[in-house]
Length: 371
Image (cartoon, rainbow, N blue to C red):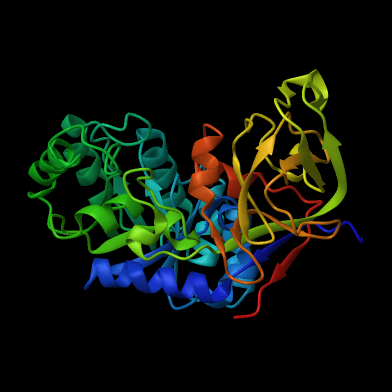
């Protein structure tokens, strides 16, 4: 397909960002989170750069099997655990670790032990310390832990929690104090390995936390977990994905003329605009407003008007060298290395970098960028 849009994956950036996680986590094991097809980057594409991690974490059994097919023999953690009793067979066959966060899962384990007495499973027991999504309530955690200890098929147990505000200031001055203190108080009676740190906690709170395993997610892909408090450069993170296209048409607007559906952008003065081959069918946000930053020929300019299914308009009034075929960077790096942070684009669009990464659609071709 000759349409010029393409997503570029930067393996050197992924390796670099894994190194940043290790630098902050120091003596902890670093698990690379590759859920949602590696945050839209593609598990098979990122694997060469992330196989130096100590383990992988994701949600989906099918994606976990893809990692095994790539040759990964280390730990794979299913972050949301098993969704049915039948999933335990795959966990046993493929040696997947998994989270237990409710009593139904414990019952399934008890049933599985009856039919598979020689199986040995590695389990992460999750406490709900304030996120209120998954996990045993603090007052129920000890009982759940004891029930799991009684099962012969349980080879190991690891304490687990997930911070709701490691990127902010709630629950204590640093955003973690209340939840971490509660967690520590409950687990002290049950010595075992611990995993608490996500990307925000790795970067912001490693000196305050004990986490034998850290779970590096968004930071591995070059996005800051606490933007706009800190940009990716503040954490020395590098973008792992660049979404680039080209100008396919140039138009001129007179004062009072509009561009795009709904005519919601009207020129106040004569303008030169470029039409780029990218739209919401490629994963760019339809809700991204006029003013969202874009790079054209390494110059920062702005989106104008409403994003269409296949095209969007950019302001070329001050990008005088831009013509048909000019490079357009929606986020990431230009071919020359000029950076447009995905966080800056997401912030202007009222969302987060996670969503932009995951939203890139199948019709966009992917390539591995040269180092």
